[in-house]
Amino acid sequence: MNFSIIRYILFRVLEFVALFLSLPCLLAVIYHEKAGFAFAAVMAVCIVVAEIGKQFKPKSNVFYAREGFVTVSLTWILLSVVGALPFYISREIPCFVDALYETVSGFTTTGATILSDVEHLSKSVQFWRLFTHWIGGMGMLVFIIAVLPLSGGYNMHLMRAESPGPSVGKLVPRVQATAKILYGIYIGITLLQIILLIAAGMSVYDSVVLSFSTMGTGGFGVLNSSIGSYSIVVQVIFTVFMILGGMNFNVYYLLLVARKPKEALKHEEARTYLMLILISSALIAWNIRGYYPNFALAFKDAAFQVASIGSSTGFSTTNFDLWPSFSKALLIVVMAIGACAGSTGGGFKVSRVMILWQDMKNELLRVVHPQIVKKPHLEGRAVEDETLRSIQSYLMIYLLICVISFLILSVDKYDFTTNLTAVMANINNTGPGLGAVGPVCNYGGYSALSKLVLMFDMITGRLELLPMLILFSPKTWKKF
Image (cartoon, rainbow, N blue to C red):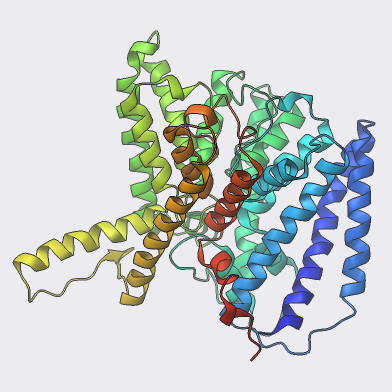
């Protein structure tokens, strides 16, 4: 294990955390808020520690996959701890475990909150809370790769460890150029949403911070009613951009950069993702039509919630916990499947489900025709055996973590539905569940132990399981 290069990158991370903290600090000055002192203090400490740490140059640039996994995991833990300090120091979230939970939920774009009243927060704290979604959506290390000329051949290891999906490839030959393209698209779509929301009558502040939350597929809001208090036009805009946030960014690359619209339209995962949202929205709209004056309004809310849950954003316009059992069950299925690989969304990922579905059909076919040799295909290419094995292992680890987390949470006072959906909503980075953690409730009532378990689930889910689990392997920490 090359500890020196890991340490060096972590100190560089602190530099960027300080840069990001300057934004809410500036906002606190504009709005004359005392919380600005908390941001300034944490920012100053980050700068000092980073400058001292940078003096210790890496002894070696050797950087393999395990260094990539460990660096990414430690980066997200460091981000969460440092990012929680302004909440705690300002006393706007006076319990550190709660402040840490809120921050982990922010950076992992889960959007699960311990707060019962978000409207009492100061503007600067509210900004930081939602801005964590935007930082975590694409990933801190992807951002660093985009702006820093890192060398030594470890860019790809970092991107693979932090990016969601069964496999990660380069859009262009150079990894840094790929990271720049991804962030360019990310920023562009965010700006477009801000402009449209302002044009629809929303305030500039709300438009900016809620666009951060949308494109990061996070789900934190600035009102206790989430998005329910805004106009229908605004809700439709959010529906569209939540869907866009859950889309594989390769589609945007093909459309906007490579100028290959035909290839973009043929993207199998994107088409399956959109079809899943459309069919689920239609089925739920039909199921809840009796709750609304007309079918159009029912479809509007159904599409919003399916887009929100499917992209793992977690916004709400209504209390869907009051919907019929079929609608709630379908939302749980959509939550488990999640968004596309290579998106800012969470969940198991559409591409993994597609591959496992084909593999299941092939196994049934081999029972009838034992001699047949057939592989699952995705995007016109055969899925390699190694990729298929990794997906099968991912499924088993995913289920194991869910079971263990559910058993630990069951010690708390909540019912079966609440605990089960709490685990699913956190590991899938979705946010709201059902029961006592539904769209009009929060996670504040859970014990400190349960919150720590859910924090682990959030980070593990965001990093696709393996990076966090590798931290617990003794072999990981052996020096080479």
